[in-house]
Image (tube, rainbow, N blue to C red; front, side):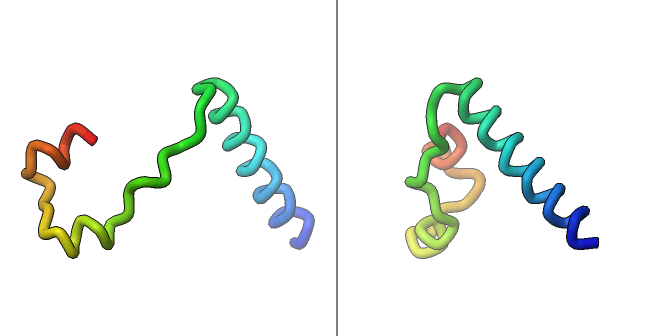
Length: 51
């Protein structure tokens, strides 16, 4: 069972690395749901949809 769990983790990490290499950039760390909640943004806000 431990081998299966380890294999799943390794596969997930490898897939993330492949995705980063293909896009040639790291994901943005600017977004947090807490910021949207405290600023009162909703899914209908124009600025929110185009981030």
